[in-house]
Amino acid sequence: MATSITRRIDGKAIANGILAGLKSEVESFVSKYGCSPKLVPILVGSDPASEIYLKRKQEAASKIGIDCSVIRLHEKTTEEYVISEICKLNQDPLVHGIIVQLPLPSEVREKEVCETINGLKDVDAFGLAHLGQIILNPLRSDLIPCTPLAVYKIIKSLEIDLSGKNAVILGRSHNVGMPIALLLAADHIKGGFNMTTTICHRATPPEELEVAVKRADVIVSAVGKPGLVRRDMIKKGAVIVDVGITRVRDKDDRYKLFGDVDPLVLMDGIASHMTPVPGGVGPCTVACLMHNTVRA
Image (tube, rainbow, N blue to C red; front, side):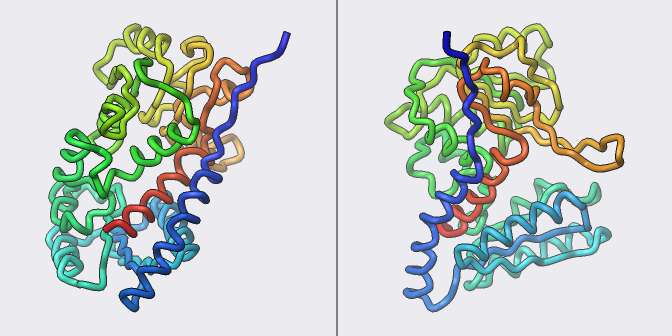
């Protein structure tokens, strides 16, 4: 009797495919306008994880010819100053994309800062117009939040008919969990997967979360809690997209990255497909930021 094998979804390969497709578009942009698409990330403070993520964004941008110019501000920078910098970038015709690297210092309000970004340059796609467009018609949305778009492209790459199947999304944030649920539930005609979706969050009783996960054909976890999804909770043959990422210090005082799903699931064959952490959703999210910058 053949042993079931969980297919490891190679997020880096999918990301490289996205970037390869964008490179020719960037070349056409440069030929037409005489300049490269320009992305400006704003970093307030010096959060180590943020520095790592920014480096990856700069590397991806450099690979396909996007100008990525980081603005670094001191952690004591006021909210008013951050907003004033964004307003300058909004008015600069040579800047095509603006992102604010999260998290921000506690004194700077995320909502107020992010909503200052011109919607046409909001390549994180956190604004109301972008989120609303996902509800109306995902295929017509030029900009979709990067992590949900990455999850969409990962699932799309599997070429599995998921119409009518069950999906569970763990996490309901406005920029990750909720848009993912909308994309999975959306009609095929609108570019969605036509799935029956359930959203679980911090107020979901543990026993109800377990029931929802056990019946799911697709599990997307975006909580940031290692071990949240155990092997015994997973339906045979389910597709798992692990968005959660947590830095954990080991006994040698080094940090390791963990997702929300027990990593041993990758080796025991209970799931049909699963993204690893790291190397799964992360690289695709960065590639989708480049996708949005070219589209902006």
